[in-house]
Length: 471
Ligand code: ADP
Image (cartoon, rainbow, N blue to C red):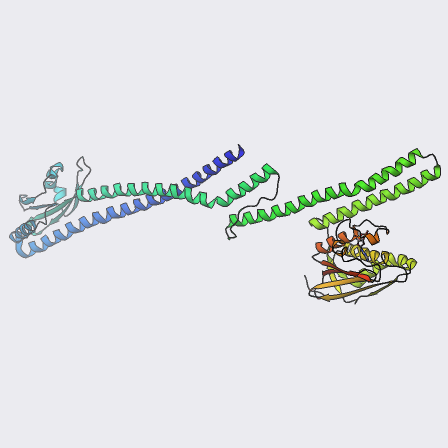
């Protein structure tokens, strides 16, 4: 229903634009035609006028030279050569007698008697009454020596016919332009709207199916509609990542919290059915531990999912690595001492990187905690750092139990714990969080290890540029 509606809306839109194009074309064509028509009309009228003018001046010259006989002979020669076919020629002598008068057939419609009246006989131009077909007769009069007057006139009939022909052809042309403009406009508009159609289809499909994997078809051109499609695709990819991240986080939370919550419930239940106050107290202590565990798991899971989906709030700043290493080490100094694990850091104080200070400390603390946790008494933990290719890499190396080749690829996975380390307390989320935080900073992680010898965990963060430079 809604797609039918949007389909008809699109058609209406294409038609509307098409009609607008057509209207603009037709108006332009009409303006052009009217302009040409007016110019043509003027040019034809002035041509007729010039013909009469030059003829009258020839007759005046001839009269000066040969008198009335010379003038009559020139007029007769002209008539014989067909020059008077469409002209009126009249010669009137001093006694107001018409000594020559030729007029083309069919000119009876004009009131030629008015040519004998005084105003018409004065040098100048007269226009005779219009007969019913709308034509006009232009007559030029020249008063010559000795009271002789010569008149020459031309009807507008021929040029009116020519202009009528022009009008008819111009109207046909404008109608044709209108048709081409409507068809072309509709075609061009619907071709131009094709990116919008693809956008519409994509959004419809997402609304219908609730799946964000549909994408707008783009051609990678610089067309703004195509670019808009590209932007929508980018936005969809981002939404898809967020939605699947949120779904994943929800699944993980549901799955990972079930076990500790069941344990929590069992502890509470056993405390309820047990009358022994010591056992009850013990159960309550365990229940508290389980509650803390649930809380830590939940926090770690949320952090991982936020870091992975890019929604973790980071405040990157220029950080001196040696300071943060020191802070992280001091958190576990007592634990290392209790366990008799020697801990040493060799980090150049000049090394600076760009990171959220709190999250960087969390990453280093996690790796140091693991190194101490999985190293037997008498072992060592060494921390050092190098800079290269725009990355500052910190390595935490221990002489602990190491990780087998089978386990090594999975240690970054959520909740993965190698068999050898099951006895140690832990959630199996520390390394996932380290990886997620490092990658959220544009950094990377690496591990190398061999069982019985020890492990080396490395984490790289973007190096800070030279002091004072803006990154
Ligand atoms: P947790 O330490 O809480 O179990 P982690 O995600 O921090 O979870 O580590 C995942 C697993 O990787 C650990 O269970 C352990 O098997 C292994 N691991 C991590 N760090 C070390 C290390 N320094 N030495 C040996 N094994 C390690």
